[in-house]
Image (cartoon, rainbow, N blue to C red; front, top):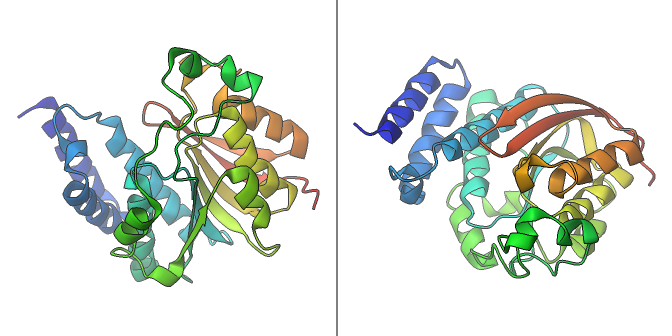
Length: 262
């Protein structure tokens, strides 16, 4: 058995030990294996499995802790994480008997935007060419919706097609989010996504934020999502708990309070 096989076996055994989320994770594991077989190839990164687990646990947290609001993802790319979240939501609906939440998806479907901010231009991944305008473009909008509608009902999907700086500002005033999966890569994109959410009070008390690219750019706090979060904390006086790392590049936080501007 390969090392990768041992890791998958360990994940399956761990899921069986969990009292409620175990069935959720087992179902997500089966769905992910069938939809994304390349992720279970021996050459694939084992940390992606850990990231999926933390997304599932995040969904269970916001359902079980009765955090107000829906779930949103910024940056859909391959649709892998959106499918993981959708299946976890479906299983939490069935097992936990809470009010169903909706899944909001934000993406330009054109890849990354033009690199305009100096904070991004100076970042390591931009200079090396890993992040470029138009990069990270994968699924089209219709392809993404097609995949997700096989997991949860279409009326529970809300897709905002366009750049964050334009779409997030159009959210209705009563919109609340319990969980955000932030896969924005760039500093400016992260600010465009999150600044209006805090400014207009769209984040609920207890909301969970998962930053997918926290440790990119050699984990420097001067770039990307780390820099954006630091500035947002200062700007909106965010009181939060740091609830740890996941995978090789992610970090997550729970928001307790902040000062919205509205």
